[in-house]
Image (tube, rainbow over all chains, first blue to last red; front, top):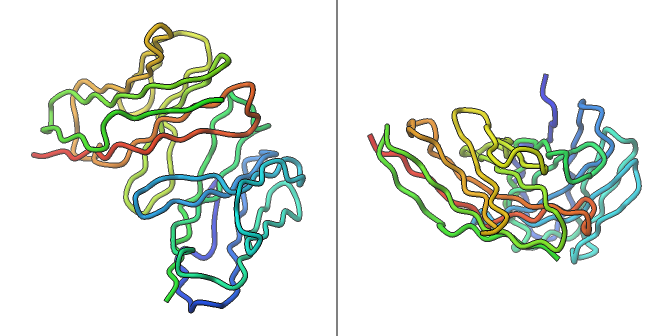
Length: 114
Length: 114
């Protein structure tokens, strides 16, 4: 009964390739997020969607494109992968994005660029 | 604007001794504060949250935190460390002027020695 699930768990690919990461939540939340965690464990928000609408778009290269087909899904497509994209990407969800509601995280997708 | 500072990047404790993880925040508005734990190769799990109710908040696994507005602090404590507490801990703040944006601290790695 995984609440927030991401696939794949590991992704190893060559520089220049295009790849996608999928995220699904079964908590009934209406807000979903993508975070990037670097090798020093620092977490940086990338995107957030509320009811399929993009509400947070941080300074992320436009090679990264999120897509939310419905409230329960938020996918991340990355074009022309670069070495600096190597990181762990976390999907999260919350109810309403309000301050009182905590986020629930997936287990992460470990992306390694060769 | 909001920010959060975790004062220790590394904390080492002996099993059975108290744990103290320090967190200071700044926020223009009444903040909500959270502590998350991240075990190796896992996503973040909520330990506890403060949302303007009781200033002493009890969480899971014997952790608790105290909100001190005068000191702008939200330190996390546990009376007796267990080996399973070895993990990365994140202090997080959100506030009304930053809908959907959760500001993460840089993390504190906890090492527990037998």
